Amino acid sequence: MPTQFSIDAKLLAGLELRGMPVSEFAKIAGLENIRGASKTVLNESFRDVRPLKNDVAERCWNLWLEIEAMCQKAEPLKLDLFDGAQVHEWLKAFRREEIFVLVIDMLSGKDGEEKKDGQDSERVE
Image (cartoon, rainbow, N blue to C red):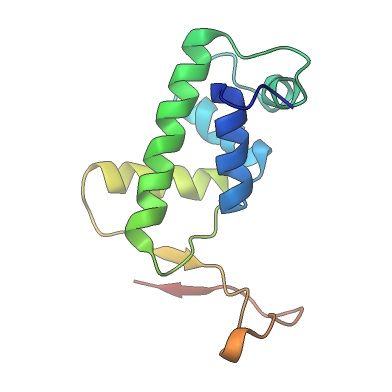
């Protein structure tokens, strides 16, 4: 685990908090032309094998802050961050301040009951 206050550690904590897979964040980083932020490089950084280069860490952190702002704007709904390409499309719309289609993660039903297997996420506009 990277040092507590490093960008690597804060980025990992944010991904875990929002339930976003590292592979999907890496896809978004690639779509944003952030070189040196592949899934392998990010995982090595998160395991403290090798930290991210400073410029890459800064660009990844700024990207994460935008994703986090988008998630906060959607609250109390929870965005489904399991498709990097879709999240990137939402992010582009968010930057243009356009309305975008959300895929809501329906993890809980009435009274906090867990979603049963086979139930899909719902789409809203």
